[in-house]
Amino acid sequence: MSKSVSFQNVSKTFPPRRGAPANTVLAGFTHEVASGEFLCLLGPSGCGKSTALNLVAGFAAPTEGRVLVGGEPVRGPGPDRGIVFQQYALFPWYTVRRNVELGLEAKGADRATRDSVTERMLRAVGLWQHRDKFPKELSGGMKQRAAIARTLAADPQVILMDEPFAALDAQTREHLQQELLTIWEGLRKTVIFVTHSVQEAVLLADRIVVLGRDHGNIVADLASPLGRPRDRLSDAVVAFERDVYGWLKHAETQSGERAAS
Ligand SMILES: Nc1ncnc2c1ncn2[C@@H]1O[C@H](COP(=O)(O)OP(=O)(O)OP(=O)(O)O)[C@@H](O)[C@H]1O
Image (cartoon, rainbow, N blue to C red; front, side):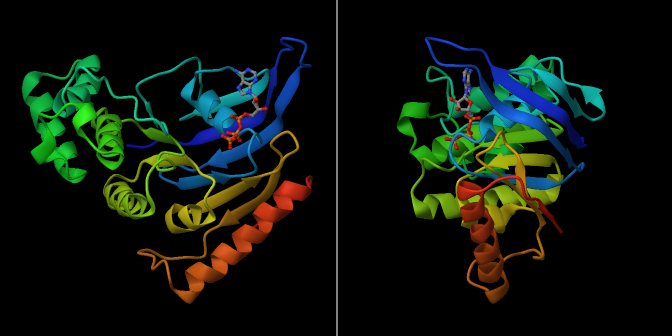
């Protein structure tokens, strides 16, 4: 099952601290993410992408407006939302298998369910043969696979991903993008994925929202014209990349305009 996410006139102001003035990061941010949609958020550094994600995760509360998940206001973190960060956030003292199992344990799953779901998820990310290793014995890509398996094992309705592949080398990143897509096509969860990479957003997204420098205003809201599977080198992919890249450049210099498709 998946859930919709709704940002309703959301503002987030961080209070002044250490001599710095108050910082309004999002102002009147309004957007609907459909259930099962794969949304990518792009935008200049500091425009509020992670802040938007944190509001959905329930790690922070809006100063004004509401964030709804499945029609219900977010009141804090919950098992309906799973998060994958750039840093792998695995427990170093547990094996890969145990790390994945923990999310299921927290949900109160019985032993047989824990075993079967853990195996299924570790196989899906190609880590089953490494299940008894500890995080320090894994490469960066393997750690991120484990983190994704752990998030998926808990069966959240919404998956929040904050630059999950940014720390990986290009080849590993491509593999993981493909694996994520295969898994997502099977599960059809709602995904909100923050990235700096136009190529990544174009490959993954049903919809790309480009945020501007100015209080997270939406500079472009672009439904992907691409079918699936996508060939990174096809003319259609390259043309859409060019289009999105243009909007990103625009976002870095200007604000206040909105394109919809
Ligand atoms: N807890 C906080 N307290 C104060 N200011 C914060 C806090 N979290 C974020 N900010 C500020 O909010 C602004 C937006 O940060 P955010 O991390 O959401 O941007 P971003 O678009 O994800 O950036 P990047 O692409 O560089 O990761 C920044 O100016 C940041 O300093």
